[in-house]
Image 1: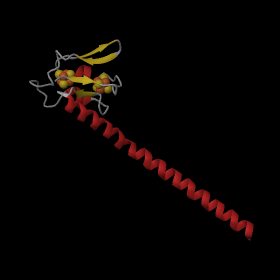
Image 2: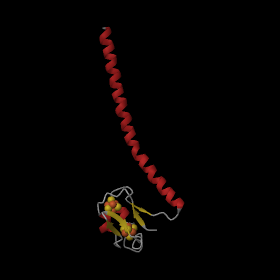
Image 3: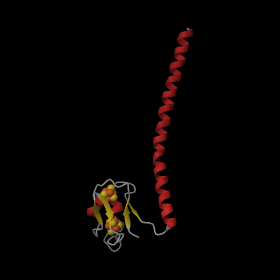
Image 4: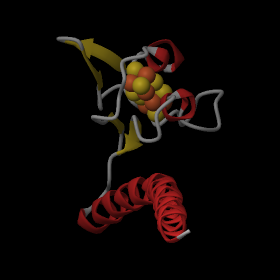
Length: 117
Ligand code: SF4
Ligand code: SF4
């Protein structure tokens, strides 16, 4: 199966010049891989698909699944990767709010001590 370009594409154009078969096209401003021209880079001097190798996004160029389950797992892995990336976000969120909460408790305690003193 050929490679395909996903909605993650940021139109950097790197794959246009990287593709050895000229399979990457821009149609109405959208990047697209012609499945008739894409050889998965097999038979070229490259050992890995050049569009995927050079793409600055995680999933801009992906291999089209061969069957339902391959597609299902590809989708699952992409979703999992997104959730994993979000981990940093929630850790930062938690750190920030726990810090703010601690500050407010300290401030409240010092106010209480100030009132009773
Ligand atoms: S896998 Fe290779 S041949 Fe296919 S679009 Fe990407 S760079 Fe071109
Ligand atoms: S290299 Fe990736 S981000 Fe750049 S145009 Fe190709 S698919 Fe889009």
